[in-house]
Image 1 (cartoon, rainbow, N blue to C red):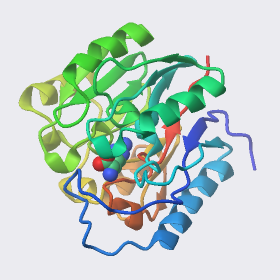
Image 2 (cartoon, protein in one colour):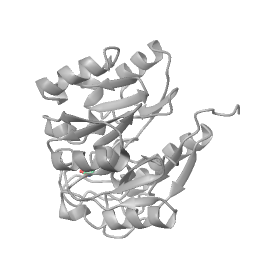
Image 3 (cartoon, rainbow, N blue to C red):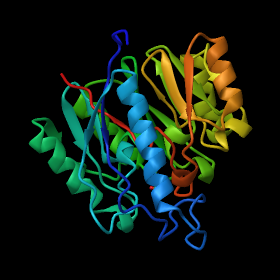
Length: 269
Ligand code: ARG
């Protein structure tokens, strides 16, 4: 295939120990059956899509007893070769923080320890020179100041208001340095005004797309890997010149995750 000029490096965690054993967001129902093999197949397909696009995928060893560790986006925030480690709100996920931090240390990154609850790229998204930072459900507002200090880039606080969209990456997707897509209703009125001001050309998502976690998508600036069920968002992307690639993540959605949750972007220096 032709060389992908916007080739990315991603970190992923195979859902070997995936399960829905507890409920820390409204998507999770521990009494509903989960097909663990199907989850692994869906995850493997996502990984293969990245490889076919010419991206690099690193893998972190999945640890038993950490069923949500597959959601690598929550493992860190990584910009300019610097990694801000995470501190989870929920004790069920606490041990994932040091596991991801140690991966980055071993990989030679400058690792900063978290001072407040921050759930990595679940809530902190790089958009051009800015870092968009969600708060309201998981990442503490106080963490935003540390994010700005560590990365030396302006941080824009966005207030999330709908518990179904508990992480910023469930309500907003960065498509390229200038463009985002988002669901306005997931944000407070003031944050909606901020988003309109910063991104007047944004794709405004519809609830039907957000409700299949359609905004939990991964863009390399041209290809956008998104949940296959988000057909309206896919059409909007095509209209704007992006190339949507649908993947079925239905099994992982039972834990409240989609393609982006499974994918941590590793930005080297
Ligand atoms: N069950 C996980 C949680 O509630 C899902 C995390 C999804 N990750 C994300 N980046 N939105 O923490």
